[in-house]
Length: 435
Ligand SMILES: C[S@@+](CC[C@H](N)C(=O)[O-])C[C@H]1O[C@@H](n2cnc3c(N)ncnc32)[C@H](O)[C@@H]1O
View 1 (spheres, helix red, strand yellow):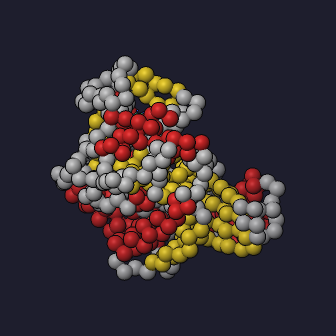
View 2 (tube, rainbow, N blue to C red):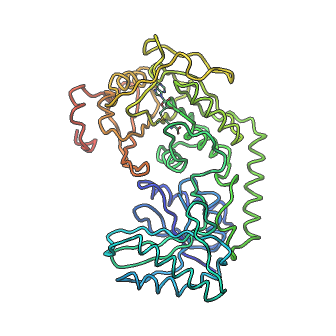
View 3 (cartoon, rainbow, N blue to C red):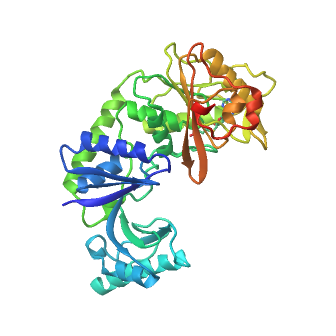
């Protein structure tokens, strides 16, 4: 039996997710029918059996969820949406003992109140279950057993049953997030956009709680992102429990093999904050990962290995931390587990991005990272100007609601593309070839 699934993802990562899903199909579905479908803003459709949906949940690093399409029909008013939801055989999927949450999202819907539409979908599902079983499910918006999503366009309503439960960026092992962590699926998608592959050196000089590093280490060690967590489909009446056991056992075995591996992953991180590095270490330990970390001011950073690789970072915006009484080139001590957090550091709040910091960061790249490819995620479009570097590409990405750019800088010997300070004030969005 085949189903239509929709995997939402951070906007800007649709193509990356489509290629990841195709890879998952080829690697984990042993010839089971699986058809990647259309990419739409914010997600990718695909078609396949239960195994495909379960494998996407277990193995996708980029999807936010995997939704199972239940029904699709044109609508005009709330009553049409109620009728559509009432017709569906929800009793096949879950009972009134399960708690429920309904979410409605819409693009250009003519309806006046999405809240009311949400209530109508919820009423229809409850009415249906009461008619079939004599009981209505309770609503639990915080930790529901079952989630239903309705998606409205100007003309059509689609109902989805969620198969993920908690969103997939919750990998199940992260405790310490730090102040401004990246979502795991955005970090994983960015890694794919950089073209990084296992074995190539990877360095995050502002690693914070270590999201890029943890995602990369799991790719390198072939650890499934969902191996440590449970999924919404496990609560549904129908899913292929045998196929799930097979997928899960293979993922657990792969993780066990990875734990024993002493492979040098060539993945490195540093941050100016000992506190953040402690958080990163605690996370890596829980995830069973071993990634070397150093306490270093990014302005004084040096390549962690002799072979050039990929540098990736999302720098602070509006706040940074400085070493008390040290100049920009001052490398900070290497931290041990016992090191005290942020001793000797001061937090500097800046309303505007700090151009001196970014100039020094750009200088460090130009002077010491020849041959590397650097990728910087920021919501600040003036960043390349502040770094006095010309980007090779810039990719629009959304970090939640925040529109960002992933800037790529190719630090090729003798041809590092510098830009004069004057261009800082007018970075624009000009295509590189037109500069
Ligand atoms: C937006 S956060 C990065 C979050 C990280 N990607 C994560 O997922 O947790 C920016 C990081 O830059 C670090 N930072 C600030 N100033 C720095 C500096 N001068 N040198 C190195 N790291 C710095 C902060 O401590 C913070 O961890």
